[in-house]
Image 1 (cartoon, rainbow, N blue to C red):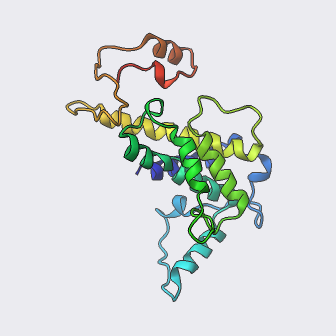
Image 2: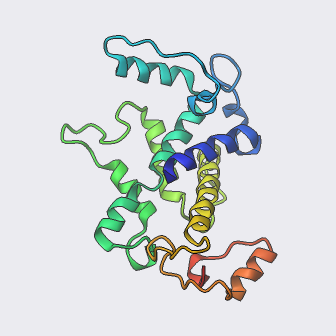
Image 3: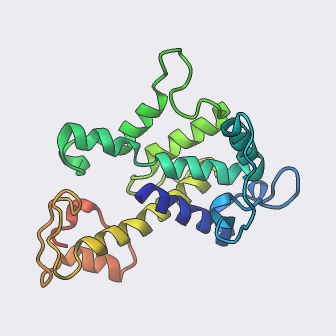
Length: 220
């Protein structure tokens, strides 16, 4: 659910905040316009796809034609951004990177793993350039701050996915600490459930509109 929500946020960010997209990425190669993705048009579409032999292959081919390249990479990066969380939780029973493993680096490593036939295990039908951009975005999505010298395309995707991730984390946390609910320690990273307390460093960072590291947070 989280990855799908991040996907929706990322596409919305890309559509509404042109600053995230380099000039050369703002137009669809064939039409000169960004092509709306299925995620944006599904709620208004009234057409029913026709069934046919090899429908899965036809659907995949159709999807590739209907989604602009930037949106496609955003989609994949958003869906795979927390790939490392599954193995992290299985191996360490925690989502705290400091107490286990960097889930972003783990996810990037998993995306590199080949299938038994030697082909890419993930995104096998994608061009190498797309796979590399997705992998680099997954690896960078949890950095405290992005390097200032990232290539424009990678920076655009990273900014959108990182912001989208934080937007949905706010939703997850708000639901977890809602009145009458006992927070799941795994979800709230083991932080103390003491609504009347706050961390001064976090408050000062918020008032100063600066970032604060998770390690400084003490309460939810």
